[in-house]
Length: 195
Image 1 (tube, rainbow, N blue to C red):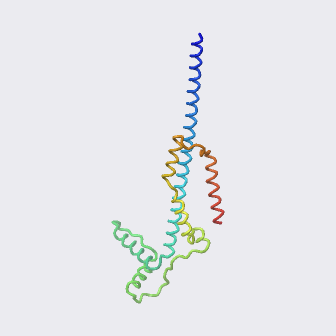
Image 2: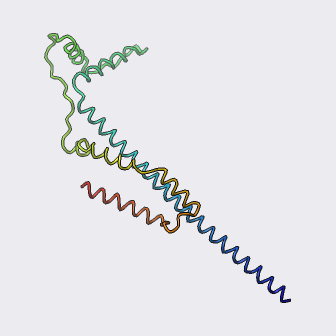
Image 3: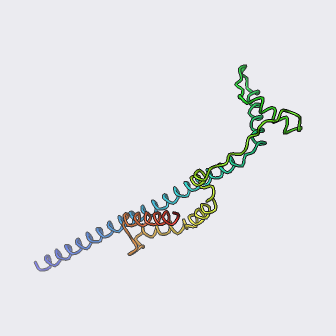
């Protein structure tokens, strides 16, 4: 009877230890998955920020290009468009209203002929508010921010995610809310700094 009681006690303790081990393993696995998801979300957010900054730079560069587009470029584009219109199979053509002006400017540009003097088209100059809105004067600052953001080490993030998933991260696990709050605080600080 004593042996049976001792054996039952051992089995009970073994079951308790096994259940505690499974519970701890499940908790650590969940924490690892949570941290991995947080790191993945940070990477996606960084990717979106870089993409948005790239779009902003593209917009600025297009605006600068349009700003510097002079008379010759307008004439060449107009003539290229006329050429494309002529290549179509249609028997009906829609011609620009300023066709005579365009052809006259083209002839004058090529030969310096005595075509009647006409007012040329100037490049579009943006007012101060538009320049500020488009960030035309801030291109170097934007490029610097992108370079700083691009310095984030992707391999380091992946290693950290793997370490967390395997349970090697230890005490560095933070809640998703803490991480998101920290990132929001950093962005708010950057916005205040820019203003």
